[in-house]
Length: 145
Image (tube, rainbow, N blue to C red; front, side, top):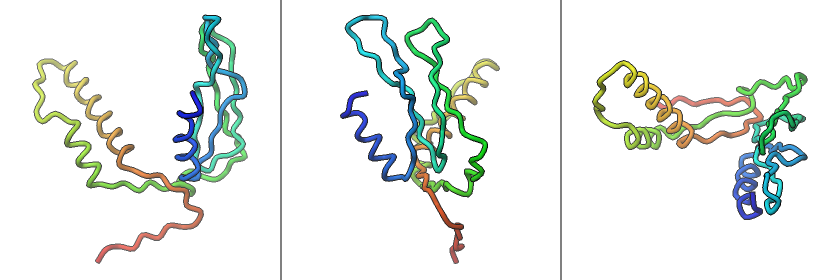
């Protein structure tokens, strides 16, 4: 990644209070002499620290697999540290625009395919319409009257 491509990622991580982990060695080792090694694999976490990042040179490939190891001593449950705030109106708009109305289905394999597409569309809409915040205190939701 170029420095210009990294700036928005760093701003996002800083603004959200996340942590960035990456290997110290490059993960892409190009075969061509005119290309430079680079790091492709990064990890963004919410309140997890001391993550060990290991690169493994095990495959006959230009990409080395990366392993992110979270220590067992990290005893803070995720649910107590990060909360998801979803804009349900935006979720509905995104889902409405991404799901076809009544697709024609002619076989059982098409049913499985449509179910998988719907599941992916729902997950994508949730991710695009949600914000994840680090909360360091108990959250009290006040019910609307």
